[in-house]
Structure formats: structure tokens, C-alpha cells
Length: 123
Ligand code: HEC
Image 1 (cartoon, rainbow, N blue to C red):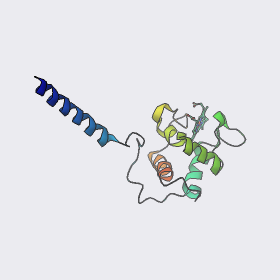
Image 2: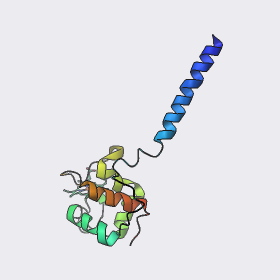
Image 3: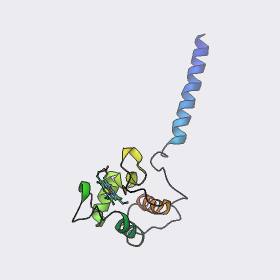
Image 4: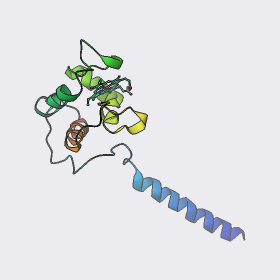
């Protein structure tokens, strides 16, 4: 009887461990289409136009809704470091989806996510 309990316990434990390991790191990146490795994303060329078209109307130096500034590199970097920039794209971790009118296109989300994954460079 004891042996059976141990066996069942071990199997359950192993299933749990395998499950956790196989899901490790996946929760943080809900929407990635394709890999970032081959994509070179530039802050100036790719990210700034997306932010200017969709975000800076509410988040600029002149009018920083929620204290969020997205018209300077440092302001954007602050949100990257806080983890908020990527979260608001998909509403991950309880964040409000931005822009409030509806999320960005998958392509724009992929660009921003890859830019952050590549170190959020001022390039
Ligand atoms: C129509 C106005 C508006 C637009 C456009 C907008 N936001 Fe926001 N944003 C808000 C408001 C209001 C809040 C604060 C209240 C909230 O969290 O819902 C906020 C909060 C945030 C936060 C802070 C969230 C947190 O949890 O700390 C971030 C980051 C953010 N927005 C990023 C963006 C990005 C990126 C875009 C463009 C893709 C964008 N916002 C577009 C109004 C806007």
C-alpha cells in the first residue's frame, strides 16, 4: 500500500515538473508570430511611427496620461523596463489593452515585442 502511494506520488510529481518546465517562459510572450532572431527592428524606423500613430495622442511629454510618456526614447524605455509596454499590447498580466480603442495589428505587436526582446535599443 505504501509502495503504491509512493509510486503514484512520484508519477504525479514528475508530471507536474514536466508540465512546468515545458511551459517555462512562454507566458510572457503571448503573441509572437515568427521568431525575432531574423527580424532587425529599428526604434527610429519601426517603433516611433507606430507609437506616433497610435499612442502619443494620449502619452506625450505635453500630455502624459497615467504618467506615461511615449514621445521620447527614455519615456518608452521606462515602460519597457517596467514591463508595461509589452503587457499593454495584449492585456497580459492584467494590463489595460492599449490603445483603448482596440489592440494594434499583429505586425505592429510583433515589431514592438521583437524590439524589446532585442534589448530595446535606441537604434
Ligand atoms: C485614447 C487615449 C490613449 C491612447 C491612444 C493610448 N493610451 Fe495608454 N493609457 C491611457 C490611459 C487613460 C491609461 C491609464 C489608465 C489605464 O491603465 O487604463 C493608459 C495607460 C498606459 C500605460 C500604463 C499601464 C500600466 O499598467 O502601468 C501604458 C504602458 C500605456 N498606456 C501604453 C500605451 C501604448 C503603447 C499606446 C499605443 C499603442 C497607448 N498607451 C495608447 C490612454 C491611452
